[in-house]
Length: 207
Image (cartoon, rainbow, N blue to C red; front, side, top):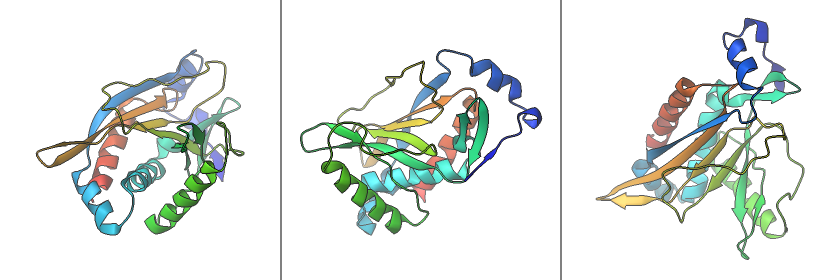
């Protein structure tokens, strides 16, 4: 379900109209996330750490309204729920685009993730199904402790989905950290909003 945002009443109307006309309206940041508590909690619960921090990411996305905004036919819509299209690696080292339904319940989400990962293993190529509009794009690069990040994008393809990526987990004196890249459409939010999202996500990872 989605509802149209009233542009005339939105205090960011001018910002939206300005940035949406740009060839590259996305901006991105790369930060470091403390995942010490989250890693320990995932292990205690018997949940894969990838599933755990993917769930925390989606929980933050669904709690924070600007990350649920999407541009459709030059209008801004607010989705009630956001799911995730994550890249899933196959045995032959190719990957496919998944779609995993979000659930507030971690165990249910873990089951959804497990089924979708298994389904991807039986497919070839990138596009393995029909995809909905209420998504974020997600990827993990557990081999690289990156300090910056960019995405391959077609500027002619209408796109307003946030893109979130995580790097290699590092361990220094017992403190575990990961690099996190966040790319968003500037017509839908600014640096202030990304900062609020990061703060929320870190709190969820620490709970």
